Image (tube, rainbow, N blue to C red; front, side, top):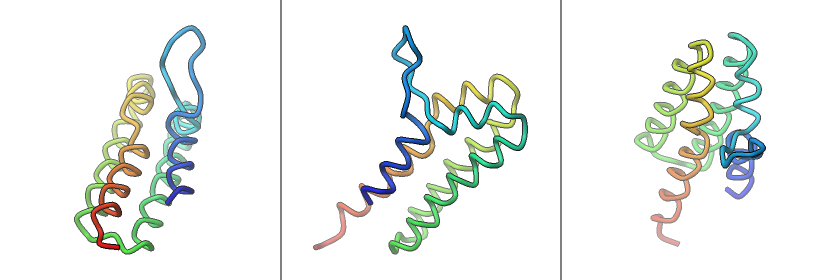
Length: 108
């Protein structure tokens, strides 16, 4: 789980835009490449969902995670505005938080 959270941080909030408090990650950088970048970023996000499934997350957790990836992927395809949305929406961080909450709720 710590590895998944580290990957989510790398994808969404690893860097700070100098002179601002805006955080972005590799996902935002890759997304600047038209179409191909968004497909690669979506594939990386789907890897996190696959790992959650391997951890035994139930369908409702997986569905929420897939919804976040779909929203980011579809809106991310829009030139310029989609790139800004990718930086602000942070689907991978949301998915890591969803997975962490589900795991914390499980009996030990």
